[in-house]
Length: 328
DNA sequence: AAGACGTGGGT
DNA sequence: TACCCAAGTCT
Image (cartoon, rainbow, N blue to C red; front, side, top):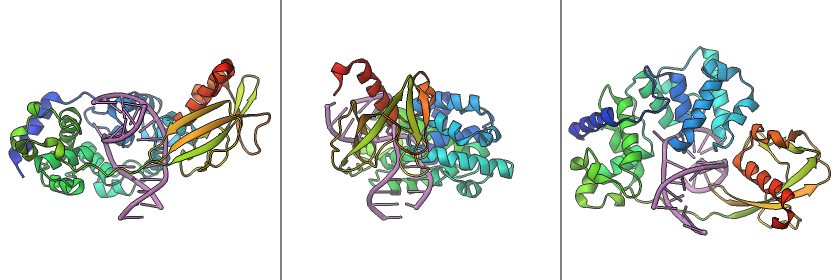
Protein backbone atom coordinates (compact mmCIF):
# COMPACT_ATOMS: atom_id res chain seq x y z
CA UNK A 1 0.00 0.00 0.00
CA UNK A 2 0.85 3.63 -0.28
CA UNK A 3 3.65 4.93 1.95
CA UNK A 4 2.63 8.45 0.91
CA UNK A 5 -0.77 8.09 2.52
CA UNK A 6 0.81 6.68 5.68
CA UNK A 7 3.18 9.63 5.93
CA UNK A 8 0.39 12.12 5.31
CA UNK A 9 -1.59 10.54 8.09
CA UNK A 10 1.35 10.58 10.51
CA UNK A 11 2.01 14.22 9.69
CA UNK A 12 -1.63 15.11 10.23
CA UNK A 13 -1.58 13.25 13.53
CA UNK A 14 1.49 15.11 14.79
CA UNK A 15 -0.38 18.36 14.29
CA UNK A 16 -3.83 17.29 15.46
CA UNK A 17 -3.26 14.54 18.02
CA UNK A 18 -5.63 14.77 20.94
CA UNK A 19 -4.08 15.46 24.33
CA UNK A 20 -5.28 12.44 26.30
CA UNK A 21 -4.18 11.76 29.88
CA UNK A 22 -2.53 8.43 29.03
CA UNK A 23 -0.42 10.00 26.28
CA UNK A 24 2.53 11.16 28.37
CA UNK A 25 6.15 11.02 27.25
CA UNK A 26 7.83 8.75 27.70
CA UNK A 27 4.94 6.32 27.61
CA UNK A 28 4.40 4.45 30.84
CA UNK A 29 3.60 0.76 30.24
CA UNK A 30 1.24 0.71 33.22
CA UNK A 31 -0.80 3.66 32.01
CA UNK A 32 -0.75 2.44 28.45
CA UNK A 33 -2.02 -0.97 29.49
CA UNK A 34 -4.64 0.42 31.89
CA UNK A 35 -6.00 2.87 29.31
CA UNK A 36 -6.10 0.24 26.57
CA UNK A 37 -8.06 -2.17 28.76
CA UNK A 38 -10.47 0.58 29.82
CA UNK A 39 -10.94 1.63 26.21
CA UNK A 40 -12.03 -1.84 25.08
CA UNK A 41 -15.56 -1.26 23.75
CA UNK A 42 -15.72 1.97 25.75
CA UNK A 43 -15.54 5.58 24.59
CA UNK A 44 -12.76 8.07 25.36
CA UNK A 45 -15.33 10.36 27.00
CA UNK A 46 -16.38 7.63 29.41
CA UNK A 47 -12.86 6.43 30.13
CA UNK A 48 -11.05 9.73 30.71
CA UNK A 49 -12.39 10.62 34.19
CA UNK A 50 -12.32 6.99 35.30
CA UNK A 51 -8.73 6.60 34.17
CA UNK A 52 -7.69 9.70 36.13
CA UNK A 53 -9.33 8.40 39.30
CA UNK A 54 -7.68 5.02 38.84
CA UNK A 55 -4.11 6.27 38.43
CA UNK A 56 -4.50 8.76 41.24
CA UNK A 57 -5.57 5.96 43.55
CA UNK A 58 -3.08 3.38 42.21
CA UNK A 59 -0.16 5.18 40.52
CA UNK A 60 1.79 2.01 39.75
CA UNK A 61 1.07 -1.58 38.79
CA UNK A 62 2.58 -2.64 42.12
CA UNK A 63 0.10 -0.46 44.01
CA UNK A 64 -2.76 -1.90 41.97
CA UNK A 65 -1.53 -5.44 42.54
CA UNK A 66 -1.53 -4.84 46.30
CA UNK A 67 -5.13 -3.56 46.41
CA UNK A 68 -8.06 -5.72 47.52
CA UNK A 69 -10.30 -7.22 44.81
CA UNK A 70 -13.40 -5.42 46.08
CA UNK A 71 -11.64 -2.05 46.01
CA UNK A 72 -10.65 -2.49 42.37
CA UNK A 73 -14.02 -3.90 41.30
CA UNK A 74 -15.71 -1.02 43.11
CA UNK A 75 -13.55 1.51 41.29
CA UNK A 76 -14.50 -0.21 38.01
CA UNK A 77 -18.23 -0.13 38.81
CA UNK A 78 -20.25 1.48 36.03
CA UNK A 79 -17.63 0.87 33.35
CA UNK A 80 -19.17 -2.41 32.23
CA UNK A 81 -17.64 -5.62 30.90
CA UNK A 82 -16.50 -6.58 34.38
CA UNK A 83 -14.40 -9.50 33.17
CA UNK A 84 -11.97 -6.74 32.22
CA UNK A 85 -11.66 -5.74 35.88
CA UNK A 86 -11.23 -9.34 37.00
CA UNK A 87 -8.52 -9.84 34.37
CA UNK A 88 -7.01 -6.49 35.34
CA UNK A 89 -6.50 -7.73 38.89
CA UNK A 90 -4.96 -11.02 37.76
CA UNK A 91 -2.77 -9.23 35.25
CA UNK A 92 -1.50 -6.62 37.71
CA UNK A 93 -0.50 -9.33 40.17
CA UNK A 94 1.23 -11.40 37.50
CA UNK A 95 3.14 -8.35 36.30
CA UNK A 96 4.11 -7.29 39.82
CA UNK A 97 5.27 -10.83 40.59
CA UNK A 98 7.52 -10.98 37.54
CA UNK A 99 8.92 -7.50 38.18
CA UNK A 100 7.33 -5.53 35.35
CA UNK A 101 5.49 -5.80 32.06
CA UNK A 102 6.88 -8.06 29.33
CA UNK A 103 8.35 -5.80 26.64
CA UNK A 104 7.21 -7.85 23.64
CA UNK A 105 3.89 -8.46 21.95
CA UNK A 106 4.24 -12.22 22.45
CA UNK A 107 4.98 -11.81 26.14
CA UNK A 108 2.13 -9.36 26.67
CA UNK A 109 -0.29 -11.66 24.83
CA UNK A 110 0.13 -14.26 27.59
CA UNK A 111 -1.27 -11.93 30.24
CA UNK A 112 -4.95 -12.17 31.22
CA UNK A 113 -7.16 -9.67 29.41
CA UNK A 114 -4.62 -8.89 26.68
CA UNK A 115 -5.89 -10.18 23.36
CA UNK A 116 -4.46 -9.66 19.90
CA UNK A 117 -5.30 -5.96 19.78
CA UNK A 118 -4.22 -4.89 23.27
CA UNK A 119 -0.97 -6.85 23.24
CA UNK A 120 0.01 -5.22 19.95
CA UNK A 121 -1.09 -1.76 21.12
CA UNK A 122 0.95 -1.89 24.35
CA UNK A 123 3.97 -3.40 22.57
CA UNK A 124 3.89 -0.69 19.91
CA UNK A 125 2.92 2.33 22.02
CA UNK A 126 4.81 1.63 25.25
CA UNK A 127 7.76 -0.40 23.96
CA UNK A 128 8.21 0.81 20.38
CA UNK A 129 7.84 -2.65 18.84
CA UNK A 130 6.65 -2.95 15.25
CA UNK A 131 3.39 -4.65 16.25
CA UNK A 132 0.26 -3.77 14.25
CA UNK A 133 -2.67 -2.99 16.56
CA UNK A 134 -5.81 -3.69 14.56
CA UNK A 135 -8.99 -2.41 16.18
CA UNK A 136 -12.37 -1.48 14.80
CA UNK A 137 -11.17 2.00 13.80
CA UNK A 138 -8.27 0.59 11.82
CA UNK A 139 -10.59 -1.90 10.17
CA UNK A 140 -13.07 0.81 9.21
CA UNK A 141 -10.45 3.23 7.86
CA UNK A 142 -8.75 0.45 5.89
CA UNK A 143 -12.09 -0.83 4.61
CA UNK A 144 -12.72 2.60 3.11
CA UNK A 145 -9.20 3.33 1.87
CA UNK A 146 -9.04 -0.06 0.14
CA UNK A 147 -12.78 -0.33 -0.57
CA UNK A 148 -13.02 -3.70 1.15
CA UNK A 149 -16.40 -4.73 2.56
CA UNK A 150 -15.17 -7.41 4.96
CA UNK A 151 -13.90 -5.96 8.26
CA UNK A 152 -11.39 -8.70 9.01
CA UNK A 153 -10.00 -8.67 5.47
CA UNK A 154 -9.62 -4.91 5.73
CA UNK A 155 -7.74 -5.31 9.00
CA UNK A 156 -5.39 -7.79 7.38
CA UNK A 157 -4.82 -5.38 4.50
CA UNK A 158 -4.02 -2.61 6.99
CA UNK A 159 -1.11 -4.57 8.49
CA UNK A 160 1.08 -3.88 5.48
CA UNK A 161 0.30 -0.21 5.81
CA UNK A 162 2.02 0.39 9.18
CA UNK A 163 5.34 2.25 8.60
CA UNK A 164 8.39 0.47 10.09
CA UNK A 165 9.53 2.17 13.27
CA UNK A 166 6.24 4.04 13.75
CA UNK A 167 3.66 1.38 14.59
CA UNK A 168 2.55 3.03 17.83
CA UNK A 169 2.10 6.48 16.33
CA UNK A 170 0.40 5.07 13.28
CA UNK A 171 -2.09 3.07 15.30
CA UNK A 172 -2.98 6.20 17.28
CA UNK A 173 -3.19 8.21 14.07
CA UNK A 174 -5.64 5.72 12.58
CA UNK A 175 -7.71 5.64 15.76
CA UNK A 176 -7.89 9.42 16.00
CA UNK A 177 -8.83 9.60 12.34
CA UNK A 178 -11.46 6.92 12.87
CA UNK A 179 -13.06 8.79 15.75
CA UNK A 180 -12.83 12.34 14.41
CA UNK A 181 -13.25 12.18 10.62
CA UNK A 182 -13.58 8.62 9.34
CA UNK A 183 -16.57 8.02 11.64
CA UNK A 184 -18.95 5.09 11.19
CA UNK A 185 -21.72 7.45 10.07
CA UNK A 186 -21.43 10.71 8.12
CA UNK A 187 -17.64 10.65 7.65
CA UNK A 188 -16.08 14.06 7.08
CA UNK A 189 -14.19 13.07 3.96
CA UNK A 190 -13.67 16.63 2.77
CA UNK A 191 -11.41 17.28 5.77
CA UNK A 192 -9.56 13.97 5.59
CA UNK A 193 -5.79 14.23 5.05
CA UNK A 194 -5.74 11.07 2.92
CA UNK A 195 -8.95 11.42 0.93
CA UNK A 196 -6.91 11.53 -2.29
CA UNK A 197 -5.74 8.00 -1.45
CA UNK A 198 -9.15 6.66 -0.46
CA UNK A 199 -10.86 4.28 -2.87
CA UNK A 200 -14.26 4.49 -1.16
CA UNK A 201 -14.17 8.29 -1.42
CA UNK A 202 -13.25 8.02 -5.08
CA UNK A 203 -16.22 5.70 -5.55
CA UNK A 204 -18.42 8.30 -3.86
CA UNK A 205 -19.76 5.93 -1.20
CA UNK A 206 -17.51 5.94 1.89
CA UNK A 207 -20.38 4.81 4.11
CA UNK A 208 -20.78 1.62 2.07
CA UNK A 209 -17.55 0.32 3.69
CA UNK A 210 -17.23 -1.76 5.70
CA UNK A 211 -20.39 -3.83 5.26
CA UNK A 212 -22.78 -3.37 8.21
CA UNK A 213 -22.79 -5.94 10.99
CA UNK A 214 -25.70 -8.34 11.10
CA UNK A 215 -28.00 -7.45 13.95
CA UNK A 216 -29.69 -10.02 16.11
CA UNK A 217 -32.73 -9.55 18.27
CA UNK A 218 -32.51 -9.06 22.00
CA UNK A 219 -34.66 -11.40 24.10
CA UNK A 220 -36.51 -10.16 27.18
CA UNK A 221 -35.92 -11.47 30.67
CA UNK A 222 -37.22 -10.83 34.17
CA UNK A 223 -35.57 -10.76 37.55
CA UNK A 224 -36.55 -10.32 41.18
CA UNK A 225 -34.35 -8.26 43.50
CA UNK A 226 -35.10 -8.34 47.22
CA UNK A 227 -35.45 -5.00 48.95
CA UNK A 228 -34.52 -5.58 52.59
CA UNK A 229 -34.48 -2.32 54.58
CA UNK A 230 -33.44 -1.59 58.13
CA UNK A 231 -33.27 1.93 59.52
CA UNK A 232 -31.14 3.77 56.94
CA UNK A 233 -29.56 0.69 55.43
CA UNK A 234 -30.12 -1.75 52.56
CA UNK A 235 -29.01 -5.38 52.38
CA UNK A 236 -26.46 -6.00 49.62
CA UNK A 237 -24.66 -9.13 48.44
CA UNK A 238 -21.71 -9.92 46.18
CA UNK A 239 -22.50 -11.76 42.97
CA UNK A 240 -20.72 -15.02 42.06
CA UNK A 241 -17.20 -14.46 40.76
CA UNK A 242 -17.90 -15.43 37.16
CA UNK A 243 -20.48 -14.59 34.54
CA UNK A 244 -22.71 -11.53 34.20
CA UNK A 245 -21.66 -8.75 36.62
CA UNK A 246 -19.40 -11.38 38.20
CA UNK A 247 -17.90 -10.36 41.53
CA UNK A 248 -19.87 -7.12 41.72
CA UNK A 249 -21.99 -5.75 44.56
CA UNK A 250 -25.72 -6.28 44.01
CA UNK A 251 -29.17 -6.54 45.50
CA UNK A 252 -29.93 -10.14 46.49
CA UNK A 253 -32.27 -11.90 44.11
CA UNK A 254 -33.49 -14.89 42.22
CA UNK A 255 -32.13 -16.34 39.00
CA UNK A 256 -33.40 -14.33 36.03
CA UNK A 257 -35.94 -16.07 33.80
CA UNK A 258 -38.07 -15.75 30.66
CA UNK A 259 -41.45 -15.46 32.41
CA UNK A 260 -42.66 -12.44 34.34
CA UNK A 261 -42.78 -13.49 38.00
CA UNK A 262 -46.00 -12.78 39.91
CA UNK A 263 -44.69 -10.50 42.64
CA UNK A 264 -45.63 -7.13 44.07
CA UNK A 265 -42.69 -4.85 43.33
CA UNK A 266 -42.04 -1.42 44.80
CA UNK A 267 -40.26 -0.53 41.56
CA UNK A 268 -39.46 -2.04 38.16
CA UNK A 269 -36.26 -1.06 36.42
CA UNK A 270 -35.83 -1.90 32.72
CA UNK A 271 -32.18 -2.33 31.76
CA UNK A 272 -30.65 -2.94 28.36
CA UNK A 273 -27.74 -5.34 28.21
CA UNK A 274 -25.85 -6.17 25.03
CA UNK A 275 -27.67 -9.43 24.45
CA UNK A 276 -30.99 -9.08 26.30
CA UNK A 277 -33.32 -6.65 28.02
CA UNK A 278 -34.07 -7.13 31.70
CA UNK A 279 -37.02 -6.03 33.79
CA UNK A 280 -35.74 -6.09 37.35
CA UNK A 281 -38.60 -6.12 39.87
CA UNK A 282 -37.55 -4.73 43.24
CA UNK A 283 -39.66 -6.51 45.86
CA UNK A 284 -39.74 -5.51 49.56
CA UNK A 285 -39.02 -8.24 52.09
CA UNK A 286 -38.97 -8.15 55.89
CA UNK A 287 -35.68 -10.01 56.41
CA UNK A 288 -32.56 -10.40 54.26
CA UNK A 289 -32.56 -13.69 52.36
CA UNK A 290 -30.21 -16.39 53.72
CA UNK A 291 -26.58 -16.17 52.67
CA UNK A 292 -23.65 -13.77 52.85
CA UNK A 293 -24.24 -10.05 52.62
CA UNK A 294 -23.99 -6.76 54.46
CA UNK A 295 -26.05 -3.76 55.52
CA UNK A 296 -25.08 -0.80 53.35
CA UNK A 297 -25.98 2.68 54.64
CA UNK A 298 -28.21 4.43 52.12
CA UNK A 299 -26.12 7.56 52.50
CA UNK A 300 -23.04 5.57 51.42
CA UNK A 301 -24.54 3.73 48.43
CA UNK A 302 -22.25 5.72 46.16
CA UNK A 303 -19.28 3.94 47.73
CA UNK A 304 -20.78 0.47 47.43
CA UNK A 305 -19.31 -0.14 43.96
CA UNK A 306 -22.66 -1.00 42.40
CA UNK A 307 -22.90 -1.68 38.68
CA UNK A 308 -25.34 0.55 36.85
CA UNK A 309 -28.16 -2.03 36.79
CA UNK A 310 -28.37 -2.09 40.59
CA UNK A 311 -27.55 1.57 41.08
CA UNK A 312 -30.54 2.50 38.91
CA UNK A 313 -32.84 -0.13 40.42
CA UNK A 314 -32.00 1.15 43.90
CA UNK A 315 -32.59 4.75 42.83
CA UNK A 316 -36.01 3.70 41.56
CA UNK A 317 -36.83 1.90 44.81
CA UNK A 318 -35.71 4.81 46.99
CA UNK A 319 -37.79 7.13 44.83
CA UNK A 320 -40.80 4.86 45.27
CA UNK A 321 -40.30 4.90 49.05
CA UNK A 322 -40.37 8.70 49.03
CA UNK A 323 -43.22 9.03 46.53
CA UNK A 324 -45.42 5.93 46.86
CA UNK A 325 -48.06 7.38 44.56
CA UNK A 326 -45.59 7.45 41.68
CA UNK A 327 -44.65 3.78 42.07
CA UNK A 328 -45.20 1.55 39.05
C1' DA B 1 -16.67 -20.07 16.27
C1' DA B 2 -20.62 -17.81 17.59
C1' DG B 3 -22.31 -16.03 21.72
C1' DA B 4 -21.54 -13.91 26.34
C1' DC B 5 -20.26 -9.93 28.25
C1' DG B 6 -22.25 -3.37 30.19
C1' DT B 7 -22.96 1.00 29.54
C1' DG B 8 -23.56 5.72 27.80
C1' DG B 9 -23.78 8.81 24.05
C1' DG B 10 -25.05 10.08 19.36
C1' DT B 11 -28.59 10.30 15.80
C1' DT C 1 -37.93 6.43 20.41
C1' DA C 2 -35.10 2.85 19.08
C1' DC C 3 -31.10 1.65 17.22
C1' DC C 4 -26.22 1.86 16.43
C1' DC C 5 -21.88 1.83 18.08
C1' DA C 6 -17.31 2.00 21.00
C1' DA C 7 -9.19 1.56 21.39
C1' DG C 8 -12.16 -6.57 22.41
C1' DT C 9 -11.52 -10.86 25.08
C1' DC C 10 -12.74 -15.29 26.40
C1' DT C 11 -14.85 -19.70 25.89
